[in-house]
Length: 563
Image (cartoon, rainbow, N blue to C red):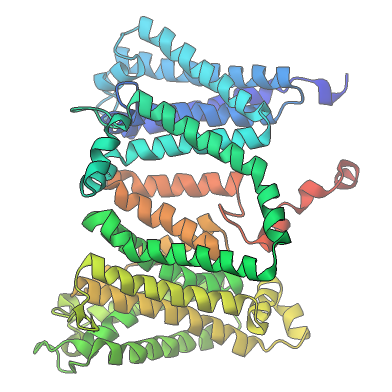
């Protein structure tokens, strides 16, 4: 019998075992018990169970992808779900019969109650096995579903989970909009219940799924009709679209309120840094782990130039707008200084040297040698807020516009550079430095321009951070910031400008919205990156060149691939 018609039972068991191990990890680090306190759908499903069910759903989906017929796919996904359920049942039995809390603190009676739906053993385990096996099969059903329907269902489920997570913040925001809160009260749980109501979850899922399907069906027709319009009509539509975006951007702080505007500001600073590092790493292929150094230089420079604190020997008391170009120029020079010693380095060696540069800047900021000038471990305090047209930018709602202006400027420059002669030189150097040099590209100037441009964006972000906080300390510029910005680019898509915004929302915005789960943020970071490298190594919104490179083997016929 041909191998194409055989059932790949080994893969089904393997993926079930992997999903079970992931489920045990989620349970024993305390995520199931902690997240069980928050409902996604009020009175129906908690966030803790959502994580477990999503794990088995994804495992069932990938189990189905390794089979050749729909019957085999559904059978494999069911086996995967069954293996997962048996492993989780074994965990519950071990916790019930043995005292594991001396070693595993979260192996508690509460965990058993959650896993058994408070029905105890064995009745609760029967429910556990049945439900998780069904969700494994649903993963297979999702795989065999046509791609457009699968995409719509996935989006609908994602929006339901997101709204359930952010229910508290949404309710507070709606409360500030008058009648909107009472008009949408049916969507959310009542009283002490959190998350969406059952009716709200169903309505949101149906509306999002149906809207996505309708858009996928009608989008080609709409696009063809727009292309047939006269040029002046197309231009008018673009102007109308840009006008709507500008209105939304201008009135967003009023709609969001204080807390959500602060979240947008934090995310905007990371996006601004990400746009700079995307030039260095994504466009030019220069792995820079000391990127936070320029962030610190920009912050300290604006602090020294604008503060009137008597504790610093060099405080000048300049206006922010006068100090800003000086700060960016200093960061550009710092980028050139960093670039000169590493011109002949590549890969890991470049990463190590840039990492050292970032640590040197941090240690210098802490040193007694520079303490009279930049404050040492006590930092710089009383940095004045900037003023624009008589408005003091000292609140989240006013600083928002400064951050948005910085992001728009960085976005414009990045887009213009990407398609310019210099941008093409960066991409050629990223692919192969020797070939790029043979084609006549000046590697010295190209590398230095990449470092200098990235440093300018990072320095701009640092100056805004300094006036936003009013105080800066050396501990605010740790290596982890560089790692976070690099992770942002990887998750969004290396070299992709829209990917920077997607990565910023996922890795900077979502953790700020989910502060109650902050202790698990780094764990989620790591898990997300691992899954990303396996499932979408090109990122959520990849650059087309990277996407083609990473999936080029998928377009090679099977005979050529095996020859």
